[in-house]
Length: 311
Image (cartoon, helix red, strand yellow):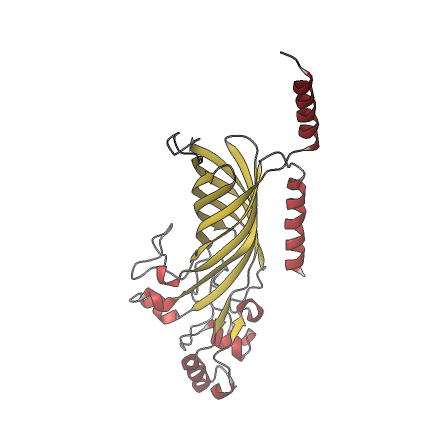
């Protein structure tokens, strides 16, 4: 239900912007590329760091968006997009980091994102080719800033080692042989951190892009965008370990996947730093050569006058 409301809000915003259509000012397209995450899982042997230093590049996933862009003038444009960003990570990728190795957490998540981004031209050239060429190729470099609303649902699998360990110590009563270790469980449902967080959140995307336009017809672009979120639960890790008395057997295994009996209240994640995600995408779009009724009327009048004039 919440996702349907989220999609309805995005469509309403898109339809509102659509009323601004003008000649050659719209382009519609698709973008795709990578999806990465930065949060409580990441890095190597060092403590957690900001920006891109803790990225696990081997955990890169896929992202894709549909978008519409409206150009207000030769400097400013706005892009409305909707798509999916897949992210994942695991403490195993942190190698020798003893704290993360002992936690042994992992997750996957798909973010369904709707965004409005303002693009400001930093550099532009009307034609990148010598004038002797018949084709016209313009180029530009632009900055990106805006806002996003996204729906997410982190998931993880049960680990047999953890299930067997917790069964032996009496934390769970279900026989480990009865679990499905190939199934991905919704972590929010089991409140592994003792928090019923929202699946909806917002983010601030910031980035840079470069694009070329061929004959004022097709546009090709390459963008790098980093989104700072207002949630710490993209990976389901934030704050202390939940009290096992408040968790069922599956929740105990998901919250303590290493098999260690971490005491309730001990550190599981860092609540003082929100998660972030980023994309590197290539896009292709078609410029819509639309002429408004006013423009047609004005052009028609001028054309009729020209036909009736004498020299």
